[in-house]
Length: 549
Image (cartoon, rainbow, N blue to C red; front, side, top):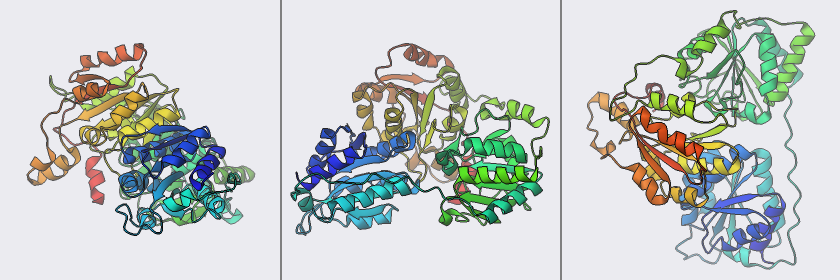
């Protein structure tokens, strides 16, 4: 076999079950070898869509995502999706064909390694037939063990080189769980024992480490309230002292309690400007601690008083054991009437608002609440970027921390539909909801054909304000002209039907009957809702978000 065939067969042998991509001449053979080895190939209509599908598939399935692209433009088309994955530390392997060393005049020739490094991915290459096994193993380990996005370049001349037999690759080693030092455990236990109003904020790192149960136990012993970044929403679902999401999406009650903490501990959480509202959720005298498996993440976004290198789950268990050894247990911030108040005010949909719906446009809050009531509990929500995104992200309940796929590491619009497709393929047992703005929906519209072709019974909800709403509400108050960010009304339901979806326009609450009927049917194709939403006011989180721009 040649190198291309051997690489595909070896990856299939490592357990790759699904590969996404757009096939061209440069990656034709490696994809066919993967398929011959038992992997299922999902053809996207654009390489950016393929990369985002693989990213979402990896997030939801827990596997290494694999995407294959043609040399040159295949890689450049995929770069936005690759950047999102790299910024989110998604374990993703990009199999990128590359012009051979001698093809110096090829119109496809670009510096692919520099492109990968420039967006935060790790560039690797199959250098020769002789080094192919070692090169592939190195790239796979980087993705699987270190949770990095790796661009593995496959030069065409090396792909064609013959090998005497298949590549023998070692299985990826189990990642070592970094344990905190005894001194760090004691220091964090001291801080928790001294606190009267502690709050834990858990991020995706805590979710990935399985820290949810241990953090619940530690919070109960230390009297801490529980919150998450939006990436880990649902991690503490059902706990009476769960504040839901911290940051720009926080409820007024959650913001009040988090900003009133005397100890704030981030667990596998970057403590970014989004999670802490540019520091406004940190009190003047609040002690800030951060626990992360990656030492480089500690204090990266804001100064911290106590930095602990360690896996979130292992650290939570160690601190709980230390407090138990000391005989320490306190109610702390878990005040007697607080659980009742959280039950009444803990979710955005529980907070009264003045419904701004008209006969022509539905309030996005009303739309989201009605959908939350209609949809089955076993759901997963993939959210695109834009002014609308807070509504589906926090008004729609999710069953656990794997139920929200929030690809906002790079904050590009247009990724939501492809993200939902990867999500649906990873968990076909759940109803997938793609929540998009009209700008993002039209930017990624080609993948509607992919969703229809795959027979995905997913719900696509477009919060349609006929504009790039974030820009309208950011620049409009300053009196700036807005013609460049407003558009004529578009019949997105008709566009959806043109691709083969079921499609409906929603202007009033009664228009959502179509969802009930679709849910009761076979759901053999997507349903696209073109929800004409009110656009007079910006989303509540927008002013906070633009402080960082």
